[in-house]
Length: 426
Image 1 (cartoon, rainbow, N blue to C red):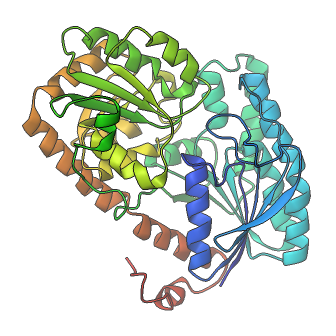
Image 2 (image 1 turned 90 degrees about the vertical axis):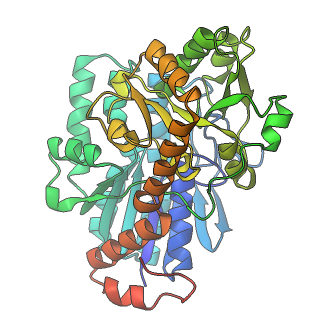
């Protein structure tokens, strides 16, 4: 049994993206007999607004599914521009320092795990782990520095050079560094991380919870769409890096010639109001809010195909976690990605891929998949198979647990054999 101190800026009750995976990881390890304490922030994502149930500038402790969760104050900007994001992350690095140090000294964990974002708060975790005689593990969900400069949030060259140097120092300070795709692992090697310290930990999907379902769902009735209408679905955060304006451009191109193709954009985020204004005159674009876990599977089944837009500047800076759920739903994916990138490799054979940032090519691919139901069935079946083989939550988390036990000097194989019978080993 391990004592693990987990530090990450995002956690439940936020629903999507990094918060979801942080929460599921901690709760899964807790249910498997390990003791998990979490240092995190109040929930704010993806709306970039703290709910009324939580105070942004107060420390708070609670227990969720057996996991002790300590929340540190944080600055949450309503309009998360580049400088404001930097202050946002710096505020968590500052306020989370005390609970991390206190828990490490009082509780003496075997392992400290930090998740980026936020990378700036991870530096302390590695230092505290060394002082406490514990092992340290860093998990990268995306490359914050590269994304910030590639997407234009920052442009100063000297600042870029400084931030890359700080990033490298932080990356190389951990005993293990994991990330979510082979392409991102290669980027870590290029940044100077020893290959022996790397581990691939892709985001997972519960293939028993997300399954192919009937496309004639309540969502069609609510949106006044018929069974003959084809639905292209995007579900996730609505921020700069998703390139969701490209979906609106494709919808404009198809509104007259392919009026039976309807676009549903589900989610929240700082770009949602802008996207609504862009689509105000379009009858084939529909916006809905975030859905609960109980309704999420039905939402995915409503789609005839899923949408994964992307700007070229974001290539291999992240592998969208939503892709696993898309595959598990048994529906094909229409994605934007340049050849050889992680997304292109993942989607090949389970959907159609066009050049990143090309809204016209995106629209043409939608025309192709809309007129060919046999192609949709074939690609959808391949997508489901890929989810079962490469995105299976149980297999991924068992593999991670063995690696964590090995890192901490415990017998991973013995621990697997001691698991409850209700959880089958991979």
